[in-house]
Amino acid sequence: APPQLLRAGPTYLIIQLNTNSIIGDGPIVRKEIEYRMARGPWAEVHAVSLQTYKLWHLDPDTEYEISVLLTRPGDGGTGRPGPPLISRTKCAEPMRAPKGLAFAEIQARQLTLQWEPLGYNVTRCHTYTVSLCYHYILGSSHNQTIRECVKTEQGVSRYTIKNLLPYRNVHVRLVLTNPEGRKEGKEVTFQTDEDVPGGIAAESLTFTPLEDMIFLKWEEPQEPNGLITQYEISYQSIESSDPAVNVPGPRRTISKLRNETYHVFSNLHPGTTYLFSVRARTGKGFGQAALTEITTNISAPSFDYADMPSPLGESENTITVLLRPAQGRGAPISVYQVIVEEERARRLRREP
Image (cartoon, rainbow, N blue to C red; front, side, top):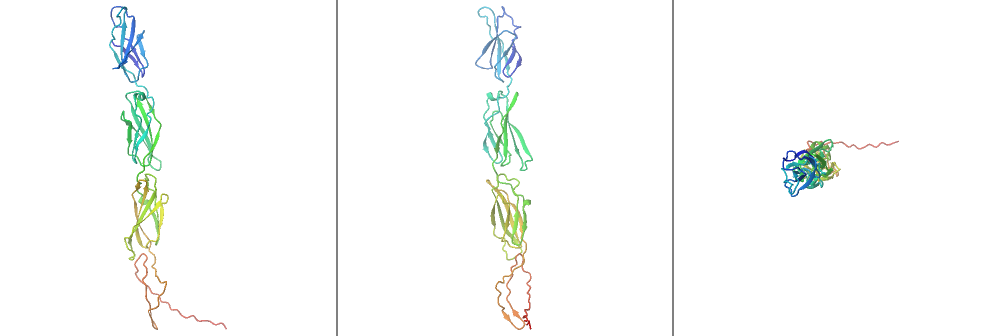
C-alpha cells in the first residue's frame, strides 16, 4: 500500500510508511523513502527508522510522488519502489508585494498602470490574486472620497482605471494575496491629466448696469478640470430702444487673468441690451460659455449747443431760430419743449 499523508505544510510533508501490511521472505533490514516532484527529473532517497517521517525543505504548492523502498538481507534484497503517494504541499505566504508600479499612459479621465510580472518565487503559490486599490477625492470641497479595489486577471501586470476625474491625485497600491496570506505594497500617487473646464454657472453671473457702463462679475467653474489660465468675455449689442444705435453691433472680446473674475465695460450705449458670454480656459482649451443679457439704463437726452447759431430772423414780436436734433441716449425723442425767457435790461440804481 502507498504511504499515508498525516500532515502537509508549505515546506514539509509528514507521512506514515504503512509497511506493516507488507509480507515477504525474510526480515526487513532497511527502510527508505524515495520522493520526487511529480513528473520531475530527479529523485532523493532518505533512510528512515520509524513508521512516520517528515520531508523537509520542499517547495510550496508543489506536487510530490513519495514511495517506500524496503531491503531484506542478501544480495538483491532491495525491492522496487512501492506504490506512490501523490501529495501537494500547502501554499506559503507571499514573499512581498509587487514592485515597479508605474504609469504606462495618463489621460484626463483614465490611468493605465503597469508593474513587474510576478513569478512563483514571489507568489509562493500557483493560485493568487493581485488587487489594485485606489482612492481619490471626488469634489473640490474635500468632503467625499472614492475608494475601490479591483482584482486583476492572474498573470496580467497592466490595468486601466477608468471613469476618473481630470486633474485629480489618485493614490494607488498593489495587494498580492494567496490562500496563506497577503502583502500590501507602498502607496503611489498619480495625477490625471487636465481637460477643458466645465461651464461657468449662469446663476453665478452678477451685474450692475449704468447708463453707459456695466459691471459684470462671475465665479470659477465648479469643475475647473485643471488650472484655469484665463477667462474670455465676449459681448455684443443685440437690441436698443434708441433708433440711432445700429443693432446687432460688432462683437468684441476681452481676456482676463485667472484671478480676475470681474470687469467694467465702458463706452456702451444707453438703453441698449447686450449679450454677454463668459468662458474659462485651461491648457486643454475653452469650456462651455455662460450667457446672459444685460440692458443699460436710459439716459437723459443731450444737445450739442457748444456754438449757439445766430437767429434766422427777427421782428418786433418774433424770433426765428434753428433747432438742432437732440441725441436720444437710449430712447427715441418723443417731444421737444422750447422755453422762451424774456431778458429785461437791468436798471442801474444810483446812490445819491
